[in-house]
Length: 150
Image (cartoon, rainbow, N blue to C red; front, side, top):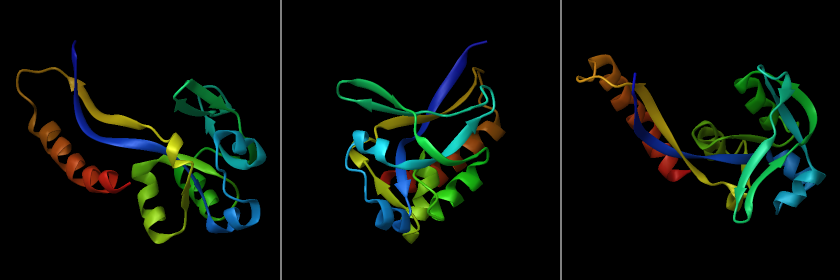
């Protein structure tokens, strides 16, 4: 079958830290500064390893293996570890938005956060099923405002 991809919004992978982490360790100003920081690791269940941080820079892609203070396998635990000051974290802007707005987390290295598409992918069909249409419309309403502000 052929798949259709309908754009929902755009997002960025953001490096975040708690104000307490930044007060104790300083704010990274460049990708190279990440080698002087520690991060909360996120476990990839397929590989059994933590996920490298990937950046798309002007001179190409760059993968950073961070030193980790602890490793988790749950998104909520990952974000909460960052909020508690246990290390830098890297999450999608749509997940980061409430924590940025409340001041619980601070964005770092904004210049290294490139925009990426977020799409709804479904099998091609002559008629779009009502449930898919409803989910698409709801997703655009939920995702669009925070991403344009992020």
